Length: 310
Image (cartoon, rainbow, N blue to C red; front, top):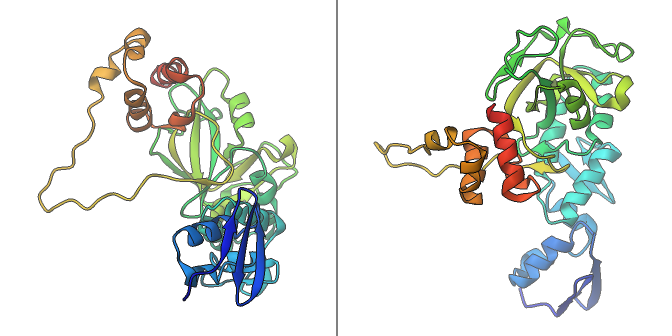
């Protein structure tokens, strides 16, 4: 395909295609993708990204389809809250595939009420969707990672808690009742008291109830996985869980970073370490989620390390 005359500014992109002028504004779901395609001289891709609908269709796969300005799954419109997240991500050049995977997982939830209630909870700041379509929430626990109610359930990073679904209260009018609880950051912090806040990964399929109290800041689920300690408030879009691991040659040993020397350091000694070393120690050694986003430089990061380690 021949090159297309075009201009790119910070606010708009204008492309002449087949004798017609197409103007795309910043904030449109096709803006970032179109800009990249033009700069990369990918003319075939450019022709498919000239309208917002084409920009969305660029992401839609499988059972998802763009019809006009709406996104459909198996012929039915997605909820407005989910559509808004997809539009926002596409406009920022992010791949919203995680949102599609989230919706597919949610369809396996057997409760109509749980499906409807979940979106109110997701509107809280710092509740991101993971790349595989789950979401992250927070949980307040004791200093030794036990649940606040029974003091028996383990919530150390890596732990998975699961209850039979029919043993968990699905009544939204009962704020505190039987079940495994996770919540928004503000709720988890208030519940943790002098303990800890951990970050939990939840499959939408496992949401049982979002109580009406607490402004939908908490929920009861039948399963969650603790992925780490709280470090900084997460984003509200997509949480990346790490880059794909490179394949190792047969017989090659996997080297693990040794944080033994850092484990023995007090705050003064830790402050002498580089910021990069401290971030690796926090993220990989102590499983602090959001370690690289803790504001305040080394001082705040060391405080978080000491808090989690103690």
